[in-house]
Image (cartoon, rainbow, N blue to C red; front, top):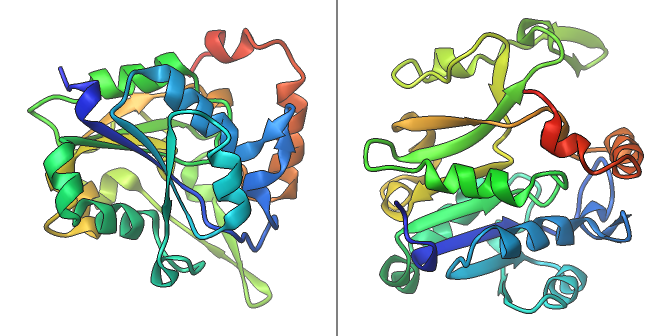
Length: 241
């Protein structure tokens, strides 16, 4: 079983968002959005470090309001809207101190407020020597092939099959997808050689109910999250995948 004390949990939170400005600090359920990820990380297990990576002073102040959280001031080169999460994780795992102090690195997107501590623990505990990473996934509410993208005034069908791209280690189930990912755990050295390619390694899927997998990207997503958070909390524990 992985050692929580040698696990680094990273919450990447950059300053801006094109679709929903300042979303990481918008109030949801009585606290800034990012604190939902921070709080679940702090309660899921006695992890060695919970680290918020950000380029924003307000996000830094909000994150440091929780005891036990550290903040990494992200370099400008990692602060643009074209920077990928794996770029941020890869930069961290390239550091000598991270390689020395941690065996496992976990990542929680700050835009997914409904994950529970037991779900985080289950994903962490399922990491084993026969796989390189554990990534959360859930069901689509519609067939993935029907996804569309608005491009220059016309609709173009977008087919994004996770299993097709990762034939060696497909995730089980029909109409399932990875969540970007909202949560994952991986061995640190999986990121060191070539961070963007880590998904091509041996990946294990951890099922999460759709309600727990809500990812806030725009105003409509935020309104839906506000609606959900006013409902009984028990729904997030009992919801079926």
